[in-house]
Image (cartoon, rainbow, N blue to C red; front, side, top):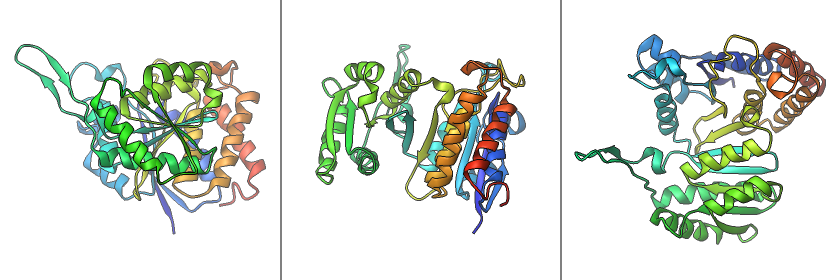
Length: 332
């Protein structure tokens, strides 16, 4: 059966790095169909909506969503925001588990609850508010996902909260502890987000699976990426239960280098590897792509990684390296 990949190139360098991922995907021995769709700022320009109904429908019907990047200063002057399309897509697909690998560590971030999705507004006196809410079921499912992932790794989970201050964090800690009872083979440790940030910065090699709520996960996963190579190399997978996942690099749209050929496609290619593993169930192809990216970062780095390769030249190196690792590559 043919797997349909919904491709959302987005804005800035998004189309450039996405193009390299598609070159690699099409070389692999897979039965896939790629459908490119407008999204983010590009969709605002085309339709007035960052997440057009046609794009959402195609994403719902796909096996996976491969997303470039969204946003840029040209959409900052009022009107719809490209980022609203991203939040809307995550919510619509209910991709509640955001996986952010950072060398040996894996941050598992709850993605569709908490502060980013709570009630917000402005009161008559000028006070602005954002509300953080969690239901026990939201905490249970992300905790269970983290424990399942830990079982195939080093059987260790750190749950991060702010239980000494926040009621939502006290709920979080209680539910995670209850879920842990179903996984006696996995060690659980609770940590407070502020002190744990120091561990990420200076002792990350000791950490394995880290599970936390939406805003804490947003901050900690960027910190983890920063101390293990930088945001330009960081990939992510956002997964739900049964429906298509979203696979995207962590970096932004970098409009200042768009069109110059300087963009590093490593994070997008690593996101493709996550898609191969989690959406298409081809872990051997995922490993081949990961290894090829690691090789290219040494032999053909882009400017941000200390070299002078262009986006396309980096992609050429990855294609060649994948071809050496996958005998049937290029003959799908």
